[in-house]
Length: 324
Image (cartoon, rainbow, N blue to C red; front, side, top):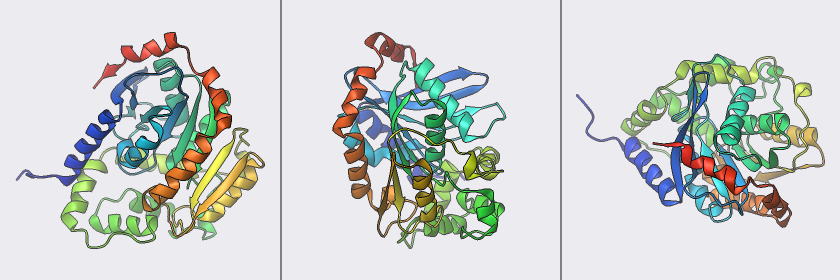
């Protein structure tokens, strides 16, 4: 018997309306080689504004993670919010699963697809891995970067040495890619200091069926790629001004990894710890989170970015995009 009501589907439609109301439009770009990326882009691109790229983490599509932040940035920036590969409307038939490949696809979309060659970016969790890779591989394209709760400096041995709450990679996959209400509740306990209690199984199952049941094999491979043979010594030391935001009580990527990242980058990085918040700090402390982002991204020093924004002729490429 078909379900008559889906709260998740209704919420997703509301997010689509809200993104449209905020001045964005939904576009899919075929990058070739079997790769298609979906992105929310400005309905009207303004060359006088700097560009801001928002990269999401694991979970639902990008809308669910950035809806609360749009109002802070759409007045000041040309905002781009893509779905990373195997989330939302983005996918590839190619076998690569590294954050480097994700970053190259995002950059190809921004550069070749939209004519945007210079930007600042925010990466939450997995999006932070992808954003850091973009900073390393395309240093001239990224002005400033915010990394939020992304264990970029983790090493494969950290799992064996007990840094994480989970005992092995398989357990981490079962929680991060929760397929039962019980596992989703466990993920919420890992992600929030004070997780919401008493949510009926129906709503949790509905969320899993609508948002978390596609591309499971590919998402497992993304997780495996993050950890496989990972050594901090192999991480490039990026040069961009970097804000590192972390929840004080993050149980997925413990705070020690944020401290490790600050030391690795050096003088260009600043770590800000948000108290009494977990991995989902953008939800738990949304106002404080947004304030730190605005203070960093809207600093006067970023005004130089205006002169580097793509020309108006390049911006016309937006209107060749296929609108969903």
